[in-house]
Image (cartoon, rainbow, N blue to C red):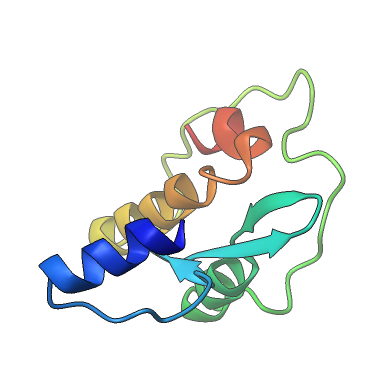
Length: 104
């Protein structure tokens, strides 16, 4: 490994920054028993960004048998805000596949 690293440093203009800690918003934990990834920091950032820090957590992200219907008298939603929220949740499914169904 050190030979490969030395050859890369000679060939390319780069630096050894040590073990990777973050990659594209994903926290990388390198331990002796394996490499783990999580998005704790990103998830907190999403909650803060969309004003959901005080929200209650739930065990199941969807209610079985619940039918979604359109609310003609409901409040209008700012489309861009909604798309940003859904996009942020989609990115969280990288490390939380259990959120995929309810997010989609």
